[in-house]
Length: 87
Image 1 (cartoon, helix red, strand yellow):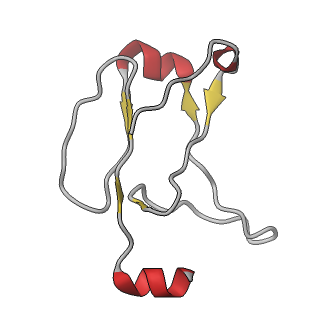
Image 2: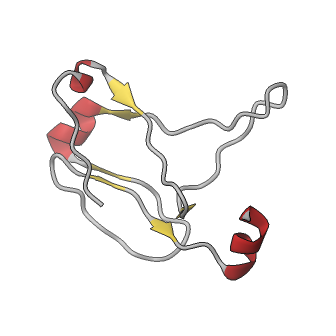
């Protein structure tokens, strides 16, 4: 999947991103016990644009090298039992 950001959005210094309908392969972060919210990975536009960024892959052994301007995230389809639990 390729995502392009508008210039107006890039005035922000950082962003977060998540998949929908797929299992995120980044390691789960701790939760705030009072609110139940997970910590999220925050990516800086300058890091992505200057040298590229790739997220850790806990779903497999794929190794990649991000190029300047690329943010690489790993996701996988849910297992059948995960689909049953989501529906």
